[in-house]
Image (cartoon, rainbow, N blue to C red; front, top):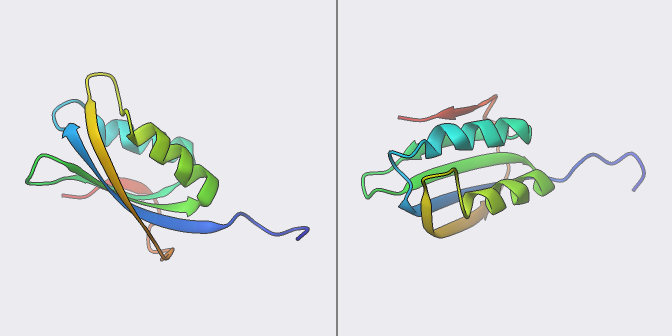
Amino acid sequence: MAGAGPVMAAFRAVVSGRVQGVGFRYSTIRRARALHLYGAVSNQADGSVAVTAEGPRSSLEELLAWLSHGPPGAHVRDVTVDWVPWSGRYRDFEVEF
């Protein structure tokens, strides 16, 4: 399809392992913004980090690949991901508290 834009998609991921106290949230924001994605990242009570991201499917797949290792100092044990409908509700990528 000539002229078609990127396929917009979204996911919710939970990253577990040593992912709190190592700059994971802010590194995720920098990576997501560099990929022109929108969404939010937050620490969870169980020690995991939750990520909701929206944007072009190819950029989301790049973010998912990055989440599997995270920033220096992190030790990612597992990433679970649920692909969800794109909502368009986010205007930036930020920390949710």
